Image 1 (cartoon, helix red, strand yellow):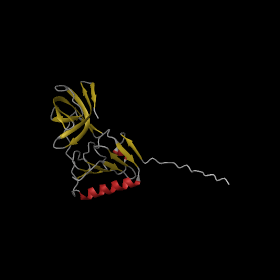
Image 2 (cartoon, rainbow, N blue to C red):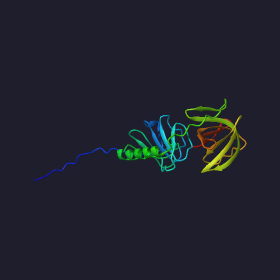
Image 3 (cartoon, rainbow, N blue to C red):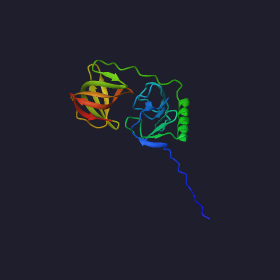
Image 4 (cartoon, rainbow, N blue to C red):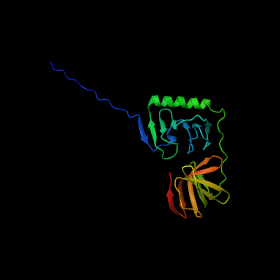
Length: 208
């Protein structure tokens, strides 16, 4: 007697993938936990941070934050480092992971200060400075370049103020007129995380 065994083919659903091409705006009603947040979150996001760099929106501070993640209603992003553009993240739709992350967020949110961190006052700007889509652009002279955290800080004077611009590598721009575009952050003083720097209409470097 011959017995024939058949195997049923099953489609394997991919629940996780690594990516450096992501956007917090893709998440529906995003919940974000971050040690540091280097980008401005969506207007409808709830955020818990250990160190308040950006203070726009519904943000609470909690010293017990460990790790960096963002989740929507049915997907999540787990970051390998801090939440900033180009950072590698694990994108997942795994229900078990999302449930655990959601529980962690709500625990931190309820255990944080009652009142969310207030948004900072907007920076004064003139015709040489403009803000578009949560980005800022300034034009001024580089007065100094100094080591700062894991990179360097350019001190740039505009017509009415001095701004700090964070870059990943040392640029020989001291004394030169530059145009800077990047993300505006708030700590003790306003800082810009540069995404592009141009000198006299000539592209100098692309950062981030």
